[in-house]
Amino acid sequence: MPSGSAPFAGPPRDSRTLERDVVQLHADVERLLLISEALWRIVREKCELSDADLIREIEKLDLEDGLPDYRKKPTPPRNCPKCQRVLSKKRAVCSICGEPVPIEPFER
Figure 1 (cartoon, rainbow, N blue to C red):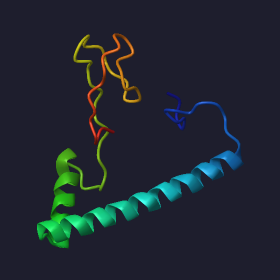
Figure 2: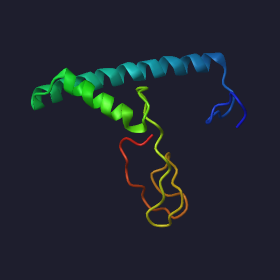
Figure 3: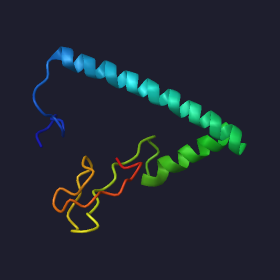
Figure 4: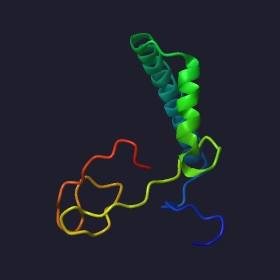
């Protein structure tokens, strides 16, 4: 891949489209932050946890890849349980044999 090119570049996009994409991504992040905070409040109350418990778990999760960078590495591609071909992360079924792809809720 040439330096500076995006892995999913697709067709060229004009600046208005890119600006709309950025606005949409910002709205998505804000919505996810709101959902995360609401879920944490529920879990904290129901399970009698503290913010320190959450922070410890975040730090533990962050270090799973050995880097304290508040990021998760992309998960490696999985193989189809039926034909063993590499699965696309964007499809609900194997593109080779049609086998339904098991859901991995935190796959990146």
